Image 1 (cartoon, rainbow, N blue to C red):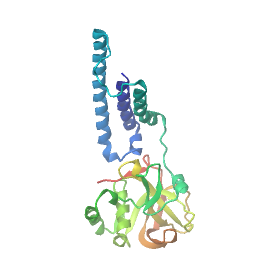
Image 2 (cartoon, helix red, strand yellow; image 1 turned 120 degrees about the vertical axis):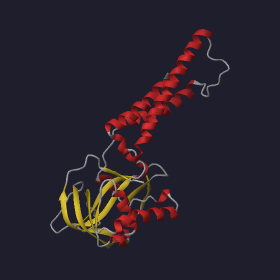
Image 3 (tube, helix red, strand yellow; image 1 turned 180 degrees about the horizontal axis):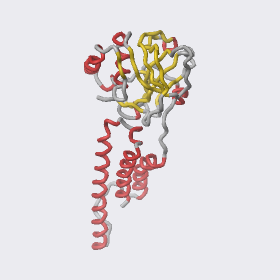
Image 4 (cartoon, helix red, strand yellow; image 1 turned 135 degrees about the horizontal axis):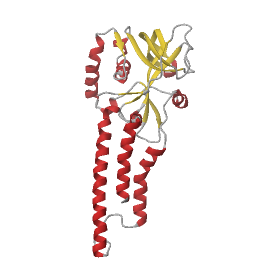
Length: 280
């Protein structure tokens, strides 16, 4: 019965995450079908466990014994207890721990580096990404180069690059990979303002939080922008900027960075979903 309740718990958790909209803070929304699949499988396995439990109860009544000669793997009570606690842990975290919307405080707390931070978020396989989305870690070099060149093709002929929620991470990765192809083009995109102590007062980063596959490879991505004279914004202000891309030496990173010389900036409302996701 305990296994049945745990599996039903997983079914309810997956349902809750999808209905509440919290699922998009854990995984790329393009992989939502995996959550649906896990929900269905959990429900099917729960029904199987319920049937097995009923059969065992009927057998106990008929034979008055505890299935002598059968090895269920975890025979000792403490072993079953530990196994059940481990299975319950994700349910406790999912239902009881609140999700927190990210803002500039995480950037202020950790700082940011290019291309990847060297710190780990509690997991040696997890690296928080900054500025440039880097999907090269999921492909060999040849395949990655081919994919990037194919993705770049539609943007070469356009003098104005319009960035949407759907193509945000793709465009940012292309700009950092092929800056010379974008210099001189105009760009429009939305994001939140981050005032770095290492930049001039008129230079601010405009970021979005993004998820490539799941929260383990999430990060904060965007461009350094040079705002028009007299235009100042506070951290976490959401803006839509339009400007021309050029290159500028950024001393803290000791390298050239693509920068947007902003010609038009409009303050906008924070979107309902602050995250953007990588499409493949």
